[in-house]
Length: 454
Ligand SMILES: [Zn+2]
Image (cartoon, rainbow, N blue to C red; front, side, top):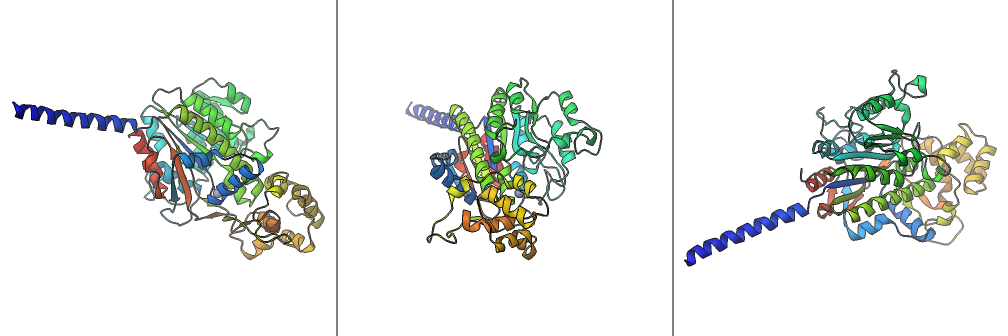
């Protein structure tokens, strides 16, 4: 009798263990995943945006709150062929878990098509969405839904996107959806906005239209090119990144099977490429507002894994210690940065291709309230950094202007391209316990996949 009791008891113990294990593993699964990518957002970009928020605006960043409450790791991002990456390879590595060649989209180094986490989510009946302030055909969003050898094939990426069945597509670069005859950049005569409508998409082109959209598939293209820098956005009809994120979550969360959403702060990278600290901070703050929206959703829906990271660092950005006239160890001049009048994109348009010394003085006074010396005018006019190191200071006069601004704003830039600086990877929700230590960006894929239970 005792033996039988022992056997029954042992079986009960095993059954209880199995049950609690399955409940635990069930509880650790994510119904939804939100992946937020600050393009080009290295540690210094987060640090400077945090300094500005806390010291100039009197508020903390939601990104920092999540770092403190959730899990944080350092993350490296080397590719199959380089130790410094660009957005395409970086996003593909996060979307598929495979190390790939620079500039490829959704294709492995062996030429084979890779399946992305977005496509896996779709196969399981989940809704999916891609949101960016850059072009929806740009490398980061494309990496989750398109497959082409080179990221520059944006006409083909646009074709693949409107046939991808991704439910929400919000961003810029409408020009790749329209033929030249209709104001677009397409060399063929296809109007992909018409084709998208035939595929069941509702099309919107302003923030107001986006808010009113009724459909469960929405294509939103808000600018012919990239969407505006946040610092220039006032008075435009474009939605903010937070508004796009909020709308995407409203629509995607209607699917009872859950969803996958990728949100990119795409122009943080562009600001850094232009060595533009003002535009960088404002787009960093706009990204943080989008993170706030996602975090509120995550708290109301705890079966959501929210991950925040970057694809690579842009600019080799550092905070510098000295001004030319002030005391020792002053650090960044947030006060002066708060008075910058607009982005370098606007500034360059006003300054023109070949500015006279008078024009340079006028524009630098207008945008930065600086009276230039002869030597400073010469650096900008003759574009001296580009003469010395044309590969690392490639784009227009941006780096020459940034060099002149060093003692005023007290930030430095090592390049107008990307650097290999390690990044942060952080998040909350089921599956986020794996976010710790020293991670490679290919592991973002496995963290999301395992959280879903695929
Ligand atoms: Zn870039």
